[in-house]
Length: 115
Length: 113
Image (tube, rainbow over all chains, first blue to last red):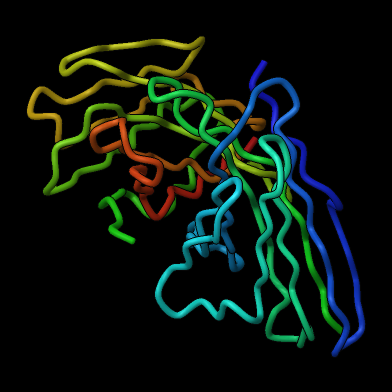
């Protein structure tokens, strides 16, 4: 149980276009999901906390208008990278909290390459 | 956000050797978690620790929740090539807030056959 499905796993897009990444909790409800960015050989950097039915909370230095987060249901959060540029190329990972005792379950990540 | 101090940053070992890594923090945590991330994948939970002093095993992996609640270690015995990956520790603060998990910077493990 406690599976988080993330799609797509890889995406290549042209500079200036937008890309949407989906994160779904398959067998539990997630009122809160988290979005991370990971650069090569580095740790996970929390970008934002996605709250179902309300606005996302962004970490300092993360552009809200660049990284749009929508959490319209208890099982789905989306991250849209708008007007993507090559410097947005990275590995994006979502996670959801299963319970206060279980920790967080992660999606399998999305490799974004902007050309 | 606040990071845990995880060491070592990387390890290069021979197959069959034992591995030890640890995390320390100036803050007290109620839960310690250890994750493994393989290339191109999201982190996968290995072991979760819920009580100070708790020692938990998962196959060749053993982890302990420090008595002070400010540290944890992970040991891997008799390493094999598939142990390669990045290991992250994570601490949960009080367990009742939505964003209360903090990560270590990771230990990159390389196992030579």
